[in-house]
Image (cartoon, rainbow, N blue to C red; front, side, top):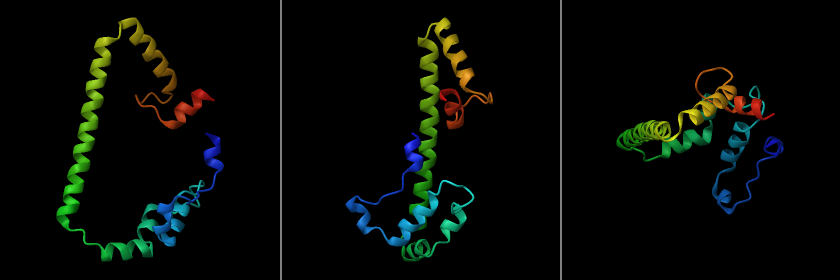
Length: 126
């Protein structure tokens, strides 16, 4: 996993030949490891090549509304899936096994918010 942090981005796949140099340059600035040096989202949106693309784009409001609608539906579906899987798991596991899993989860969940973030997983694994 630490190799990922040391590697440079390489655009070797043939698909990258069609991507503008300005885009690849912005991607490089987005993937800078140091947050202080990384381009912000608002600055990325001000990039000239993005503004050119947006001004030339034929996207209409109906397309944007449909995309937003699809994103909301996806989120709702994911929440429903999570709830159903939680219910199924609670009905299948014997109580003793559920308690053991809960104890392990609580060890990982250092801030006790009921969610596991990458930092918490790294903290337990290291």
